[in-house]
Image (cartoon, rainbow, N blue to C red; front, side, top):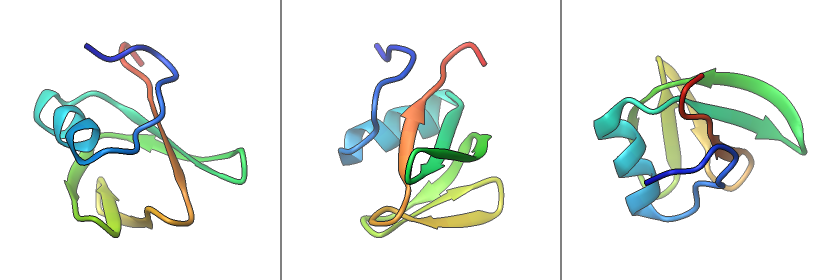
Amino acid sequence: MTEFGQLLTLHRHFHQHQIHGIPVQVLRQGVHVDIGTITSFTKHFVEIQGTLYNRNVYTFVSTPGY
């Protein structure tokens, strides 16, 4: 499954987190921006509880158990 701190980079990573409701931390240049569950995603964007994040600008980190 997913480990705490794993970077989400592949489509299947985002899909797994969305269907299982695993929390994701959002970082920009290493600085915490948000944390929450993925409500939808495409190859360019990830929506976390109503906010869109560009996958080329932000880093997404798995935070199971948060």
